[in-house]
Length: 202
Image (cartoon, rainbow, N blue to C red; front, side, top):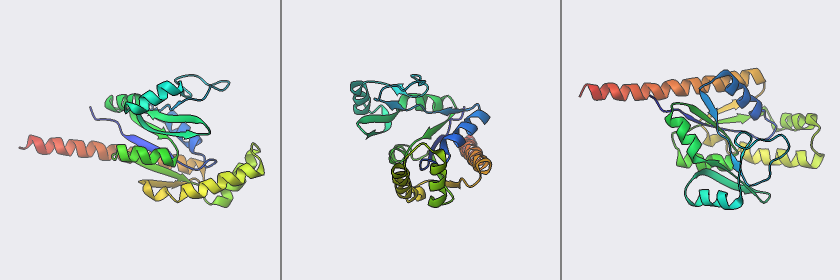
C-alpha cells in the first residue's frame, strides 16, 4: 500500500480557501481533513473532534513538549496546533491529508515534512480581496483594512509553496487544486513503483 500524500493549503482570509477545501473533500473520499487542536472554548455549534480538538492548556503544552504537534502557534491568548498522531495515522493507511493552515504553521510543517505538497491560494489582487471582505458585511472597515494588510504579508510567502492557484473563478480554482492533488498522487506512486521495479532487477 502506498502512503498518502500530505497537502498544505494556505491563503489569506477571504480568498475562498475553506470553500475550495470543502469542495475538494466532498469530491474525493480518499482525502482526510486534518482537525486542529485549540485551547479556546468551543463556540455554539462546534463539536469536539470535528471542528477542533478542544483541550486544556496543560494538555496542549504536554503534546508540544513531547513532539506531538506538527505545528503550533498562539493567537490572542489561545493556542492552536496540528496533532501529529491523526495525520500520520491517515497517511500510513494510504489516505491523503489536507492541512488548512496559515503561513506560520505551514512553514513549520514544511520543515518537518519536506515531502509535503504546498498549495497557496491567491486572490486576483488585494483590491479584489478588499471588495470580497467588504461584501461579507461581517467586519468593520478597520478590521477589513487590517486583514488586507496581513494578506499582503502572507502573499509575499507564496513562493515557498510548490503550487500557486489564483482564485479568480471559484470553479476553476477548485478544478486546479484537484488537478494538483491528482498529479501529486501519480508522481508519488510512480516513484514508489519505479524504485520497487529497480530493486526487483537486482
